[in-house]
Length: 379
Image (tube, rainbow, N blue to C red; front, side):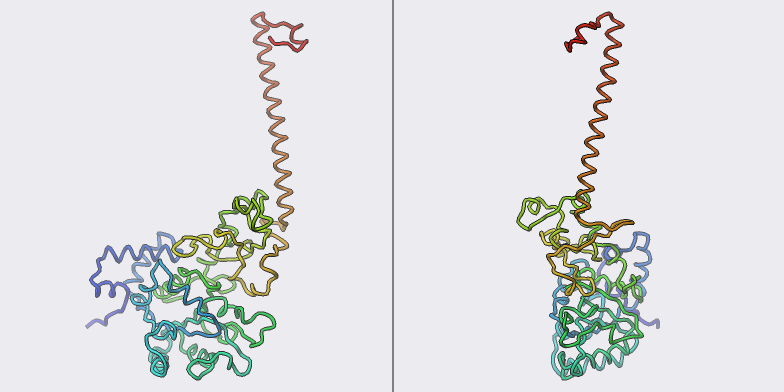
């Protein structure tokens, strides 16, 4: 008898869901994973044949904000991910069980699924005082992390705390908190930074591994390219105002009320890579810039120590150049002035040509009055 594959398609069949519903789900997954439509057949095949993954989710030095974000995913819904697409075997925040039974189950899964499970980690790793600043179930987080990481097929660092150390790593970093990748090595690691990350980015990353059994393409910092491939500046709907040199100077000025660019009041969109402008939050409803607040760069390394949030960046990276907001405004003003001059010259030339044509026409008809014309009169 052929071994049963616990795939997404098998799950749909067990729940007596139609093939049509399955295909619609695959189309949605293809889109949220940032894949082109031509990859739909690959996604369908993977959903039919790939075993759904086991997931262990650990919590370290953090505020649980990433979990709060995760449960708000709407495409796919978090409930679908947890109940239908992965086997979440341990998460001390979302689990129904608690205490000793839950910790015993964690040890069991680590042994039985060695080399086959995904380790999701939320939170940084405090190292001072042997790690006692974060203790779960009577064990330091560092100890639990190292044990779980040994048998992990891949590790996902959820949030800026796991990816970079987080707020608790801010100067002077009294607990010596570091990122997960600073403690664990030798494993494929996916960084999903953000404070917190976008819900659909969190579910999208784990679904990519669930479907294809491998980590998504990563950038130079270990982040998924499909979600961190563009600067927020590049997808911002206020970009036109930036290019025109139109900036908010104070949060209560007329420019702010008109929705102009927030760069001068501290927006870090020009140097922050994330999908806020594309996916937005709460099923695409909004994101900080749309709400009137500049980007604080929460997905970038060390954002908590990078100057004051409301102090503008000193330089703006543009194609083949570095300039400032003032330069942009000056260039825009000069460009506008030049455009007016060119337009005026073109209008004067056009009117001169029309006058010459009219003079020629009147002379041919014998209606031209030279004296009257020289005196400034009409024809």
